[in-house]
Length: 516
Image (cartoon, rainbow, N blue to C red; front, side, top):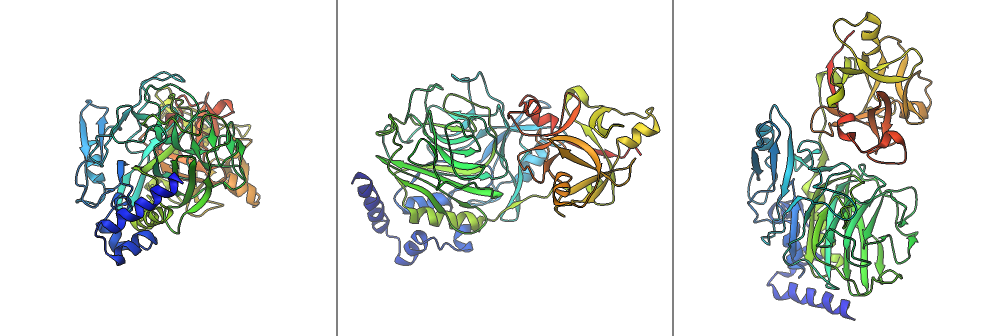
């Protein structure tokens, strides 16, 4: 009954706001056009629906049509100076060129993600918590390039160990108060640890019990809950449980999702909550769960505390990964119709993958791939006589055979022409591939499995420099050197080579002039 009352009040607020019937129909039926998306943001739509934003975070665009302030702050490594990154115009897109100019010749990290709501709920470096020490790492500023509305921008690339938080917020739901939230994630960047979250959490960085959180979770962890398939899934982190529905553990209505740009929604009210999601580039939202609170103790009523987290769990668990582009939190339980209109605004914004280009990474070119980790900056990816792949020092005085073993011929991807495959320059016909997640060179046999194992998609370097190469058939794994051996590895996981330490550096490579 209480939930229906809030929804009724939201509709009454919309009518009382003076919004015309035509505009109201557009907002609540999810029919926002491209021109509307250019003049209003998601938070204008939420406000019209009676559930205003009380936190709005984005590094890519304004989330209010009238917002003209800074989106985020970066700090450069060379001298420790900081720079606020703003917009190209009021209500518009990020001024990525300002970041590029400020960070030229060095690397930068994102120090602050500003709150656009005016309530001061900005996100900064997360401190230590009950699950892990701190302060947490900060995201490399250039590791997640995208295009939005045709304009370059950068997301927040969260490797394991990275986290942002605000424990002193204004207007965020506490106790059993209603709220809603959405976030746009990279649906191909995820982990199985705890926990890549965005939303409401404890204010003391500790696990204070069931129901003290309400946050969006994205990943493929199965420790507390799961959906159909092998993941990743959108779930709700409600503390001491990742919930995909009413039941503890498995819920069949929560599907695996893998959209490159993913809209994820969680909302909650007294004994009512929902999970929704959709492709942030096209189409609408699907409802994966809507109903009563979980049938475990401590979640009805809820005990939300009102902190905001990004990339971590409420107790600073920080062993997962993901990429965040934008997200908001609302006061009140948004209607599905309002969220549908927000989704239309998101798809109209035009999120697109930003190509990673290099003259050394074009089909037909010859290239050598140099490691960027501090231990190994003179080492190159090469194959050995037994066909295993490793890194080792290569220099002008190295033998001709060593130079040839560290040289690769670039081809269009055997499984995906938008990606790349690497043929040995020393042994023509043999390609770099993974098997059992270790790297080898092997003769191509034309099978779909071989072609997938030998295809790698270039992405911006995870450390903020160079290029990272994503496995075509395991999109959360990348070319990595670990103990000088080559693997495809995830950012944290069950395999030794998935170790999160130095993962961003170990998976970032500089495309260099070929040694042979």
